[in-house]
Amino acid sequence: MTIRRSALRWLATTHGVRDGDIFTSRYYPAAQSWTGRDAWWLQIPLHRLAALGPRPIHLVCQAGPEDAAFHYLRVPADFLHDNLAGLDLPGDGRMVSLFLSAEAESRFRDERGSAHLDLAPFERVAPATD
Image (cartoon, rainbow, N blue to C red; front, top):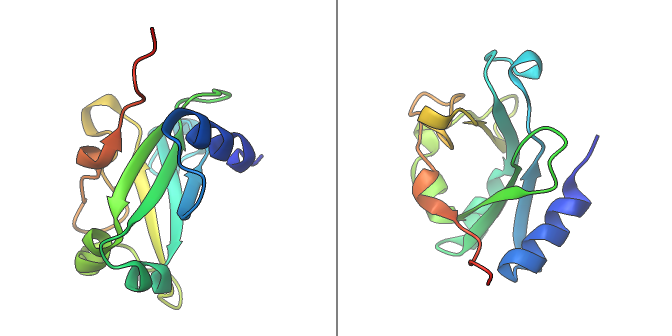
Protein backbone atom coordinates (compact mmCIF):
# COMPACT_ATOMS: atom_id res chain seq x y z
CA MET A 1 0.00 0.00 0.00
CA THR A 2 1.40 3.38 -0.97
CA ILE A 3 0.51 6.63 0.74
CA ARG A 4 2.60 8.90 -1.48
CA ARG A 5 -0.29 10.58 -3.31
CA SER A 6 -2.17 11.44 -0.10
CA ALA A 7 1.10 12.51 1.60
CA LEU A 8 1.91 14.91 -1.24
CA ARG A 9 -1.60 16.34 -1.17
CA TRP A 10 -1.41 16.79 2.62
CA LEU A 11 2.02 18.48 2.39
CA ALA A 12 0.84 20.91 -0.29
CA THR A 13 -2.38 21.75 1.54
CA THR A 14 -0.96 21.96 5.07
CA HIS A 15 2.51 23.40 4.49
CA GLY A 16 2.40 24.81 0.96
CA VAL A 17 5.21 22.51 -0.24
CA ARG A 18 4.52 21.32 -3.77
CA ASP A 19 7.94 20.47 -5.16
CA GLY A 20 11.48 19.62 -4.22
CA ASP A 21 12.91 16.38 -2.91
CA ILE A 22 9.99 14.80 -1.06
CA PHE A 23 10.22 11.35 0.53
CA THR A 24 7.26 9.63 2.15
CA SER A 25 6.71 6.71 4.47
CA ARG A 26 3.69 4.88 5.66
CA TYR A 27 3.44 4.08 9.36
CA TYR A 28 4.79 0.61 10.22
CA PRO A 29 3.19 -0.78 13.39
CA ALA A 30 5.44 -2.83 15.67
CA ALA A 31 4.17 -6.13 14.22
CA GLN A 32 5.39 -5.09 10.74
CA SER A 33 8.64 -3.41 11.78
CA TRP A 34 12.05 -5.12 11.86
CA THR A 35 12.74 -3.59 15.31
CA GLY A 36 9.41 -4.73 16.71
CA ARG A 37 8.55 -1.08 17.42
CA ASP A 38 6.41 1.47 15.59
CA ALA A 39 8.44 3.18 12.86
CA TRP A 40 8.78 4.89 9.48
CA TRP A 41 11.20 3.77 6.76
CA LEU A 42 12.60 6.15 4.14
CA GLN A 43 15.25 5.66 1.48
CA ILE A 44 17.05 8.67 0.05
CA PRO A 45 19.41 8.52 -2.94
CA LEU A 46 22.87 9.62 -1.83
CA HIS A 47 23.41 11.66 -5.00
CA ARG A 48 20.41 13.86 -4.05
CA LEU A 49 21.94 14.76 -0.68
CA ALA A 50 25.21 15.77 -2.33
CA ALA A 51 23.45 17.84 -5.01
CA LEU A 52 21.18 19.76 -2.63
CA GLY A 53 23.77 21.10 -0.20
CA PRO A 54 21.98 23.21 2.44
CA ARG A 55 18.62 23.03 0.66
CA PRO A 56 16.03 20.85 2.38
CA ILE A 57 14.68 17.43 1.77
CA HIS A 58 11.10 16.93 2.85
CA LEU A 59 10.21 13.83 4.87
CA VAL A 60 6.50 13.09 5.21
CA CYS A 61 5.52 10.32 7.61
CA GLN A 62 2.03 8.92 8.08
CA ALA A 63 0.81 9.77 11.59
CA GLY A 64 -0.61 6.32 12.29
CA PRO A 65 -1.94 3.18 10.64
CA GLU A 66 -4.69 4.03 8.14
CA ASP A 67 -4.31 7.72 9.14
CA ALA A 68 -4.90 10.58 6.70
CA ALA A 69 -2.69 12.94 8.73
CA PHE A 70 1.09 13.13 8.52
CA HIS A 71 4.21 14.45 10.23
CA TYR A 72 6.51 16.73 8.26
CA LEU A 73 10.27 17.10 8.71
CA ARG A 74 12.21 19.70 6.73
CA VAL A 75 15.80 18.47 6.94
CA PRO A 76 18.78 20.31 5.42
CA ALA A 77 20.33 17.82 3.00
CA ASP A 78 23.83 18.77 4.16
CA PHE A 79 22.91 17.74 7.73
CA LEU A 80 22.36 14.17 6.55
CA HIS A 81 25.33 14.32 4.18
CA ASP A 82 27.61 15.55 7.02
CA ASN A 83 26.44 12.64 9.19
CA LEU A 84 26.74 9.84 6.62
CA ALA A 85 29.27 7.92 8.73
CA GLY A 86 26.52 7.24 11.28
CA LEU A 87 23.76 6.40 8.80
CA ASP A 88 22.89 3.10 7.16
CA LEU A 89 23.99 2.81 3.51
CA PRO A 90 22.84 -0.70 2.57
CA GLY A 91 23.86 -2.71 -0.46
CA ASP A 92 25.92 -0.73 -2.94
CA GLY A 93 25.88 2.42 -0.75
CA ARG A 94 23.89 4.56 -3.16
CA MET A 95 20.96 5.03 -0.78
CA VAL A 96 20.61 6.30 2.76
CA SER A 97 18.17 4.10 4.65
CA LEU A 98 16.44 5.86 7.55
CA PHE A 99 14.39 3.85 9.98
CA LEU A 100 12.76 6.49 12.18
CA SER A 101 11.19 5.61 15.48
CA ALA A 102 7.49 6.42 15.82
CA GLU A 103 7.57 5.75 19.58
CA ALA A 104 6.73 8.79 21.74
CA GLU A 105 9.99 8.72 23.74
CA SER A 106 12.23 8.48 20.67
CA ARG A 107 10.13 9.92 17.85
CA PHE A 108 12.11 10.69 14.67
CA ARG A 109 15.35 9.11 15.95
CA ASP A 110 17.05 6.93 13.34
CA GLU A 111 17.17 3.36 14.64
CA ARG A 112 19.08 1.84 11.74
CA GLY A 113 22.33 3.81 11.65
CA SER A 114 25.01 3.67 14.32
CA ALA A 115 24.68 7.40 15.16
CA HIS A 116 20.98 7.14 16.07
CA LEU A 117 20.59 10.61 14.57
CA ASP A 118 17.71 12.63 16.02
CA LEU A 119 15.63 14.36 13.36
CA ALA A 120 12.95 15.64 15.77
CA PRO A 121 14.30 19.23 15.71
CA PHE A 122 13.39 19.38 12.01
CA GLU A 123 9.68 18.65 12.51
CA ARG A 124 7.38 21.38 11.21
CA VAL A 125 4.04 21.66 12.93
CA ALA A 126 1.04 22.59 10.82
CA PRO A 127 -0.12 26.16 11.30
CA ALA A 128 -3.09 26.47 13.65
CA THR A 129 -6.45 27.14 12.06
CA ASP A 130 -9.24 29.12 13.65
